[in-house]
Image (cartoon, rainbow, N blue to C red):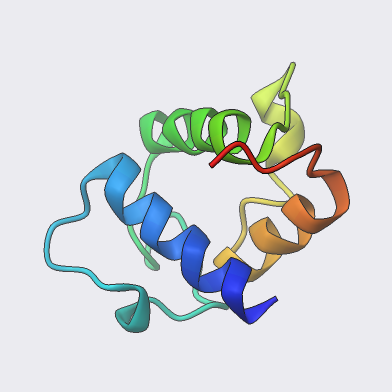
Amino acid sequence: MENLLNNLKQQIIDQINLVGLTPESIDNDSPIFNEGLGLDSIDALEIVVLLEQHYGILVNNPEDLSDHFVSIRTLAEFIEKNQVSAVS
């Protein structure tokens, strides 16, 4: 799980171009949106693309993911349960 958390943080940094952040600077349990990383709905779509490209998770309705987009940890748990195959 720790490896997935670190990889996911780096992938989000790269996908969304979060300048100045490192995986170590992102708390696994901080909120992804608003007061946490400060991401917005456009960033959420970028994360959906990341899930599809890197983890083979097809998302038909991004709104269904709101419970899983709480923190890096909840997103990693979702990936562990739904990952089809690692593409990268």
